[in-house]
Length: 151
Image (cartoon, rainbow, N blue to C red; front, top):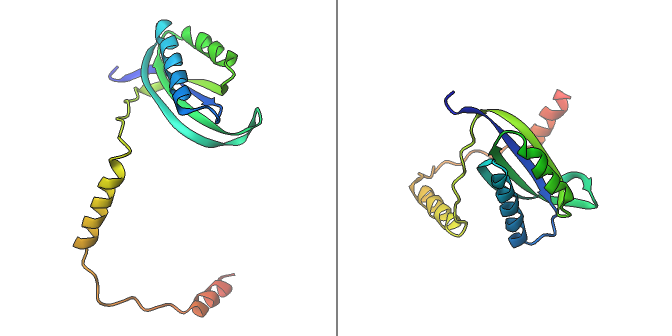
C-alpha cells in the first residue's frame, strides 16, 4: 500500500470565549495525550472560529480544531474521555478514514501575505492593456421586459 492507510480524524469544537493562547494549550494537550497513548500525529490544524448550525451549551460560535492521527484504535476512547471531561470542549467526533494520508499544511506568515498579494495585483494591473472601446450600456427596461416574458 503506497500512502493508502487507515487513519483517524478527530474534529473538536472549543468554546468561543477561550483566549488564543489557551486554544494552543488545548491543542498541545490533546496532541501530547495522543502520543503518550501510542498514537502518531499526522496533522493538527486550528480551523478558526465559526458559527454553529445550532446552539450548543448556549454557544452560537465555536473554535474548530482538526486532528489527523494514526494508532491501534484503543487510544480514541481515552482521548474522547479527556475531551468529554473538559469544560472547554463543547463537541467532538472521531471518524475512521481509509485513503491517502493527509499532508501537513505549511504555515504561512500572515504579515507577509497581504503585502505580496498587493504587489502582484499592482503588477497585473499595469501589464493589462486597456481597451479604448467601452461596452455599450444595456437598457434596464429591456432586461425587465425579457424577465417578464420568461415568466
